Image (cartoon, rainbow over all chains, first blue to last red; front, top):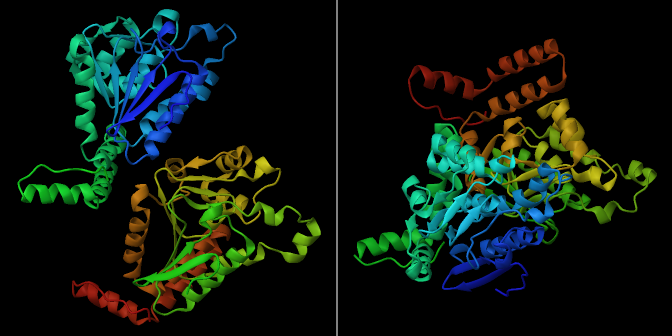
Length: 260
Length: 257
């Protein structure tokens, strides 16, 4: 995958696509170009059969500080702003049929926090901070924040985070169930890579089906969710990886999954 | 059995028509529509076929009409050619027609879908009438069929804005019947076809005629037709078999006569 991007850096190795938000001098704040480049990188990874896991992380001290407020003024129409720039990016994360890990290396603020919430997994450091910066500038959490957070941690906690706006540390995020793992800074790179490798070796198609249906199942009627499970299982049941899984089980060996 | 722009084959007692112009996302040209209609009619006459299934490929059902073909048309050339008249023949098909939609069904592609009886779509399928964006409008039944399917207010909104409609929204408004995983659209559609294949074929025909009648005739005429069709069903052996099986508490086996 050629890296022709200005605001992000994308590399691929051993089935893992690493997407680094790369505006460290601005704490990796989003610009219109960055929104577009993230979408483009996600779509390319989505189409690539050899890409089996996506890691999103930030260059330098921060994960992402959200919208670059340099581009916001009194004349900004916030709804257009979201519809044109952020919603396509958030949809691209959700529609990506590969597991997405947010390796939240530092502060994730505003829409940067929203991006981390839209990922399938969050890895954090003790010094990571999730900051819902919205309420303190008189705005509401956006970019899928109000949809995703209550589904991840429950309504009461989500409301606290959205309204009180108190930063969440890495340790607290883990306690809340928001983060999968707290990793010490000294082993950060290795541990993130290890987790990504673990995911990249799993049956990618089956993971994509879990991702496609489980969260939506939280607001769908039981009957509909059951039927979706049946269809998902039919699809998974036709996969090479299912055959391999069964065969390995019979032969008492570890399966080697190819992702489809 | 296949023709220039469509693939044709059978799957049990289901006759399958696959739109086959993949390089242009199955854009419908006049030859292709002729082939589709002729094949539908051939399946309608074929005693071994009980259901007709029409599909595109995994990326597109059909992404509209062939624009190049009509760029140089004039009102007079259109009046003389009357390219939409052939579409009316689809309405005369008596067997159930199921559409399986993956990807886009736009413009003429959407109109083709709306000419079918039951529609199974991928959850990420998109329907729409982009004609307005080209300074024209739907011409093969789109304004009429969509309005009858979803009501005036929503139909106007969709056709005016020319934006695609997602499968979930189409389902909510009763424009389509079922949503399936993109990988399983054909399988789910064929499952539906197989269920229909076990029903009494003459009943299905008489029901299709009566339900279609309800769309735009006064109630008293519709009720009269329904009654006549109900009485006509008693001319079939399948009616005797169906009622006998019911009293004997077994599954009926319908022959279509």
